[in-house]
Image 1: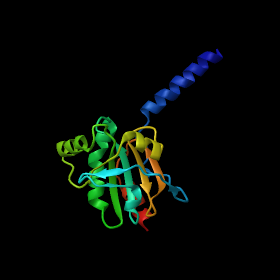
Image 2: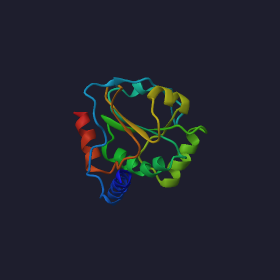
Image 3: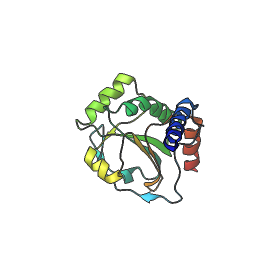
Image 4: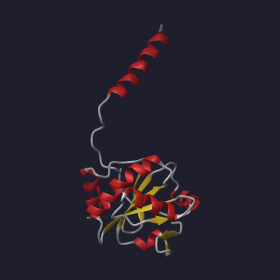
Amino acid sequence: MAQSLSRRATLAGLGASLAAGPALARPPFQLRGEGQPLLSPPIISEDGSTGKLADFAGKVILLNIWATWCPPCREEMPALDRLHGRLAGADFMVLPLCIDDTGIQRGRRFFDEIGIRYLPLFWAESLRVQLAFAFIGLPTTLLVNRQSQEIGRLPGPYDWDSDEADQQILDSLA
């Protein structure tokens, strides 16, 4: 009898979770009190120049690690493009870091196919990115402060068109 109740409770719980409505709006990051230092792999821009994360010091960076073969990455890229178009400037930028093994050209073809208008494109070797940023899945997005330190991390996709995303980023600029 106890096993039967347990099974019913489990099934009821699963059913309730499937029937639940959308989650309440939330900011993308749980911010850390202090920034965490980051290693940086060599980051290659479309013009072929090589840099590192510290080269962007002075700006708040939304570092999005993605690949063209990753469906959630592909789905969220237009919203990241719009976010960059809305908020990018002297104090903030979205840095999409493509880790396709075939290089930056595949990322450029993808950007062109879907009509990315505002985002710059960067590439780095996938293994070096994995080792430097210690992430598990794609996409993974890091919020990086002006001192090139991680202050937030988000595994998985997010709705970057949300007011909560804009507000958290604007607050991080203060």
